[in-house]
Image 1 (tube, rainbow, N blue to C red):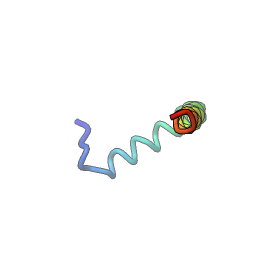
Image 2 (spheres, rainbow, N blue to C red):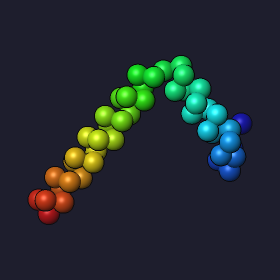
Image 3 (tube, rainbow, N blue to C red):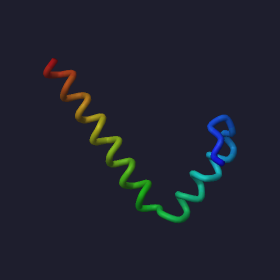
Length: 46
């Protein structure tokens, strides 16, 4: 029943995830940083 068009419901879902599992947010941030580092390395080598 998740609607992509309804940003309000997805935002509420995100808030629930943050409250339930704060460590998941930290892990996701680390993954994003690692991905950015990988992109920067590829740019240098290309």
